[in-house]
Length: 498
Image (cartoon, rainbow, N blue to C red; front, side, top):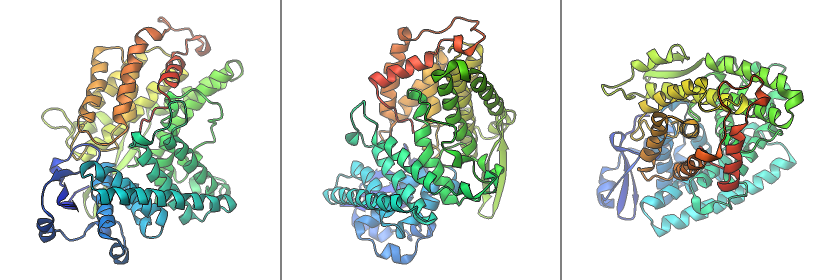
């Protein structure tokens, strides 16, 4: 997203947003400009028109709320993704603010959570706490109504959006975390959002899911709600109740749309759905290895075949009026990326960042399937091959600047850290984490990195792999991934990898 200069005044200081000088997941820098200078240089209020908001909404906000909303639109949303057209936090959720008090309060609370880090102003802090309480109270009332009668489409989308925003507050607020052995608030929130999506699912009215025409807001909501739950599953004990019907709405709509790379997760809905299915196959084998081995292994093999050639695509805007579709798969991604590297071999364009991120997610899904379902050891040639490709992908990506966003493949890097057995792969994962946490921006990365270091230390003696060659039958192989997960559940609790 191209940024014009935007400043957010709080007290006698301002926060500035400029494209060339931003780091971390929030696109801003701190300056000490005075209020008077800001007022004289304030740019035209472009941000509320960008969201399609009416003037009446802007005029109804008090000065602090106005600045908080500017921060959300001008700093937080650009830090979500480089894919402007599918940045649902901006294009869909921000538009809900003038029609849903719950969404509006949640947005203000989220923005304030970050702003007080940069400028701990008491008025802003009090306003943030008030908005958080109002959002939670409003959400409770709306949920009570939803249980009595299924909400209309628009109300349902606002409800899921509000939960997703409050979830983001829980993700980046260590002070709100529950005890280690309790379900985290952010995961409870993800489950709740998925329940609302199930409740408002239009699928029962259609014989073929391809005929469903979900709105852009619903597509965005299905992704940002389900990704939190789906990406928690790989590091959690297997539960057979995670059945194949869960997250079915990720595959609704024309087939071409489910392979479109979305800014809400950095991959296509189809690939996100595959990650959920992989966990389900592993659960089948774990809970009933005798009766389910044939079905689960055959289904997993079919999924692997699809992942090896999975097509994904995204939209590239060459100008305001010209958008072209760019396709990529395992055969074309290398050539595509070669056109988007600088003289040092690093990604230099949003288009290259999108392609490398989507490829990293595809490779991570393959490794996850190989290790958890097929139970291949980390030293197996097939795993090493994919890990090498994933490490090569990660090394291309920046870890700061305007192209570094929440679209960056956090989970694939963590997974690489788990499966790494070579110095090269270990160094790639650890250097990524060290670089990202050096920006000192609120995120779930620092606690995940601390957990990864402890897990890797334990794995040096705590994990026992099969020697090569591995047994032919999957159920005769050592389920080493489950040993790692058991250790995580006992010592770390539920990991947040979004």
